Amino acid sequence: MDKFLIRGGKPLKGTVKISGAKNSALPCLAATLLTAETVTLHNVPYVKDLITQRRLLEDLGATVLTPELHTHKVRAANIEIYEAPYDLVKTMRASVLALGPLLARFGQAKVSLPGGCAIGTRPIDLHLKAFEQLGATVSLEAGNVIARAPNGRLVGADTFFEKVSVTGTENVMMAASLARGKTTIHNAAREPEIEDLAELLNKMGANIKGAGTETITIEGIEDLGEADHTIIPDRIETGTFIVAAAITNGELEIKNCHPKHLAAVIEKLRETGVEIEVADETLTVKCGGKKLRSKNVTTEPHPLFPTDMQAQYMALMTQAEGTSTIVETIFENRFMHASELVRMGADIQISGNTATINGKTKLMGAPILASDLRASASLVLAGLAAEGETLIDRVYHIDRGYETIVRKLCGIGADIERITENLTMSAEEIK
Ligand code: EPZ
Image (cartoon, rainbow, N blue to C red):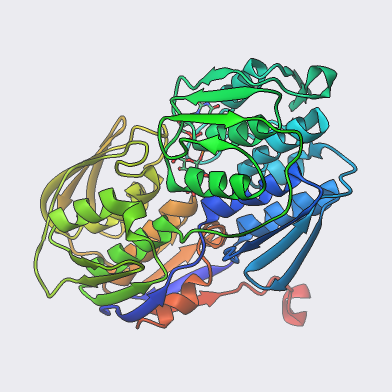
């Protein structure tokens, strides 16, 4: 497994460009299953999860062309199977986003139940309940979800999410686009990625209103058609680089971003003393050697502070003066980065869903282990701030959601290299 070797203590300086949003490209690629026409997506990030999603589309029978690394031209004209197999779903739970489109277009879908993952059990019960409200029959057989639409077509209805669910909202919005009649999604997720997906679906001919609010209405139609769409910038990658500048006491210009999509993150980081200047598609981050102030935060659904920035924020709070608390309300097990930060010298106590960080503590480089995507980012940030060498193992986690992270960090002055383990045995070792 690949590792990252980081020699910390260098302030990051320069310009970094943000890639397309992983969590928008995933549902947008799934939406291409809703039509036999060609859908072209630009600014698709070159990350592992999108390679997996592309493989799923091809396994289902779609044709995916990439005339340019970040452009996917998808034509799902010859879908032969309606099943997302376990070996794909287990590596990437976002494969469940194939469920809504397959069910809506073909009246049937079989998707392996995604297991839990490091950060929680991650059930999809709310997705399935909403599909039943749209008239589908849903059964569980040998670890698979089997969904069918009686008479081959879903029927629009009022659907209500007991908990805000990002991919749940996306799955139902896609399914309802081809249903007979009107669907209203109550307590919908409000993330920018929901709005981006709705914009793509409307370009394909759908009739969706209210995306980005808690109530979304979808007037179902018979067929969806071709579209050409550019994926929004990744707001979590943007927030991660702001923290990278702050934690190394550097100065960064962050381009190709959408500051409005991470307003709560910017506000919280400004409270801690990070100087952030905002323009339309650019952020400038300065720290000027000022001491960081410890500030409490609670993760909430958008537009409040996102759970996907919690681990990165915790790394920063180890460098702030005073005690701060982080309350994680979205996932039940999303503090695994804390123990690794403690090994580097941080002073963090966990009690239930609350982490208490006593700063400022000196971070020393150490061999550490990545456990999930955003925890990995947190450990990279800590390594950049630490004195000495940090060796992070299992960095395949970070490759899922950060495009060419080593190249981007080296481009702004970080001393980081990827160590690819030579899995072939040498002649000596074979003896
Ligand atoms: C999306 O996951 C994101 N993934 C996650 O980003 C993000 O952390 C999460 O939303 C919250 O913002 C993608 O968009 C691909 P949820 P999702 O359904 O949709 C519970 C990253 O790092 N729930 O909004 O799976 C669930 O257990 C990833 O990029 C149910 O109980 O999250 C959680 O506690 C990690 N039943 C809460 O709701 C359901 O049917 C929110 O989950 C669905 C969800």
